[in-house]
Image 1 (spheres, one colour):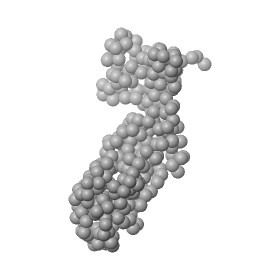
Image 2: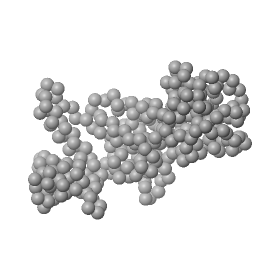
Image 3: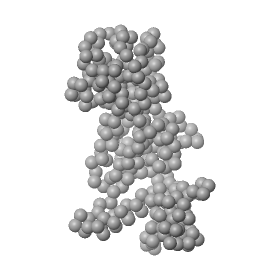
Image 4: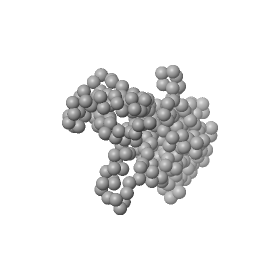
Length: 291
């Protein structure tokens, strides 16, 4: 078997980062036809197409995304070697994680903990909306999406949903607000609430729960960011409807207290991947640990 030609890999990397053959050719001081030939030679060597053409843009295929990860690692390590032999270079593998903006940061940290302490792994974490994150997952810009609202699975988007945890949901507020908590139903009717926005799974479950108990809650704020929910609760704006893991540090310090657990209301946490020919092995390791 012939060895890898790293010049071909360098040319591929330039095109992948530019997303455009013309710009990459100018940057590499090559003609477009010569650069195209180099890319085709690398594709023949690897046995996989590395790009799909979408309009005037070149978009990485799944094999192309994997090749780019390795190419970046190879050339980054070479730069480190040139910079200093004393420090050396350790190849780092990347895992790209998307997380719903309203998802508990503490939960994210616990899920990713096995990787973030490893010197050979680079964790790239992106927060956003459901639409943005699943779009990025489908275009192979992300390896896994963390969410509390699993997507429907169909032929057009063959998501693989892994349920990795579930947590009870409680009313959480300052000690002053929770001093005379009393009965849960009475508390919900009396106190202003800080709620996640309507499109979240937690909010849908809460709305069903209060309707079942004929409660008309007073809403102080609807928030699409869990960090802001935590801050509003600390300011005493109202009682936040949250899983306790989301405010674990505040509960431990006494800044916030758990007034009452909402019976039968559970928030589930899911890791969503895409059926891929070349899955990221780091994600598989996380899923096995979380199972």
